[in-house]
Image 1 (cartoon, rainbow, N blue to C red):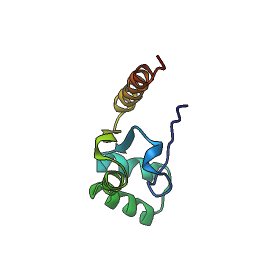
Image 2 (image 1 turned 60 degrees about the vertical axis):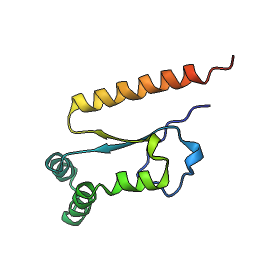
Image 3 (image 1 turned 90 degrees about the vertical axis):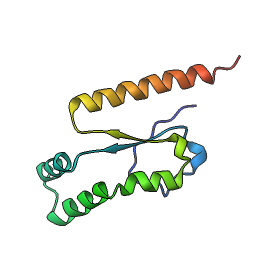
Image 4 (image 1 turned 90 degrees about the horizontal axis):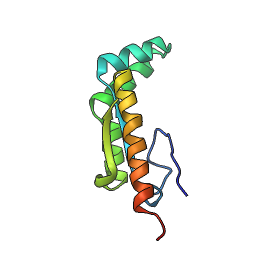
Length: 102
């Protein structure tokens, strides 16, 4: 069985559940504009900006899971997002092929 999970923390899930972990990353100016448009408070924007600058989520993922399965991917533009979807689709297709029962 295959499962795709979208979550913002590594604390709840054991490594054995995952074959691939993608951490979406944004340029700070892109992230700031996104959060501001969403109406986030100044404190929440500041916290998110600090986490992005310090790459906190990427580091947490690398500490929680095998570094070989953790990948940071850009998420600045629609093109980035489309590329990420294509990357996941390709990866899933290959995973299915590699794990077929013979």
